[in-house]
Amino acid sequence: MEKTLSCVSFIARASFIQRFLPIRGSLYSVTVTVRYRDKKQEVPAGTRVGEAVRQMGLSLEGIIARVDGRLVTEDYVLKDGDTLEIISAISGG
Amino acid sequence: MRFSKCSEQAVIHLRSHRLALCGDHFTERFRDVVKKAIKSYRQLTKDDKVLVAVSGGKDSLALWDVLLDLGYDAEGLYIDLGIKKESYSDISREKAEAFARNRGAGLIISDIRKEYGMSLHAAARKNPRTLCSVCGIIKRHEMSRVALEGGYDVLATGHNLDDEAGVLLGNLLRWNLELLRRQAPRLEAWHPKLKPKVKPLCLLTERETATYAILRGIDYVYEMECPFSLNSPSIVMKEALNRIEERSPGTKLYFFKKFQRHRNLFASREEEKQKEEGAELVECGICGFPSSSDRCAFCRIMRGKRKN
Image (cartoon, rainbow over all chains, first blue to last red; front, side, top):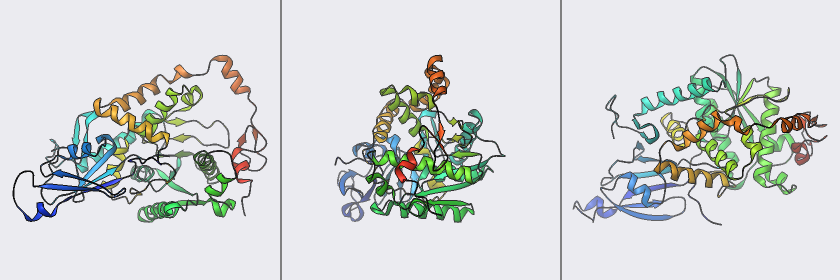
């Protein structure tokens, strides 16, 4: 069966490197883990939430985003140690 | 992104309205939009006894929450279809019961296994219809039955703008004129045993109802969906519309509102109307609800096995 993105939550976590090596540039990365279907994706710190969402192949219109449990808009810049949760708002039936 | 009015951090960016709002202002706006829909489409009066169909999801619980806050006499109805897959029915029922407890609101549970002796799955196995079609027939029947038996004036459902725009697109793509005629924010009762059906969230997107539910601390089923709805046509339509909305904000709202304004374009021609009005309806010999034959679709599926 073809998988869909409905009702999927994604979690973005700061990687080990990002947490413990305070160096700038591309080594700052955020690991994005798709909780529901076990997908993983990395985005660098400094990425805006909107970019991270689009990189996941999702539409901003169909999701809401939380960083450390707090609702944020698409222009929020992901920082070292942030946890991004993307919740699908689309329901079917 | 900051909200200019109060300098609080914005929690949602409504591109179609060029608005970024903080939690408090968004919640206030959400209620205002519901009030606007109720007023514009003459959905409810303060004297109405409202039955809210709740599924445990964000839309129906958000609707119930906002109707209670707006002072409506609103009670909930949860239809337990006995879906065992991923414990879907048990989990969603718990969410509806927890909400009712927290708000001190009345909740009616219609458990079809207890009422009729079979689950949705068992009913669908004995029927050539698809499972989703059987589910729709059962839910519509139970909503009508409970609304009638409980003396409710109106039945409210949590259909939102995405639901309405998605259904509209699907019906247009298939040029289903009969369904296009019937798609309205308030459906009048066409039989004395039926109640009017209203959709007070029809001007709000799913993203808005999810945001409202989270801000209000409503514990809804958000990490799972009906296990049978994956890949459903309604999701395909919604995703397509969201792609368009992203490029052209406001399209969904415009699409729905303009359709409502011009819905009479799809009205029956005179001879069709006469034919429709002339179509004989009888009352089902088992449940008594209007039907085109002596046994309604629901009773044919459930075999009229209601206990008690």
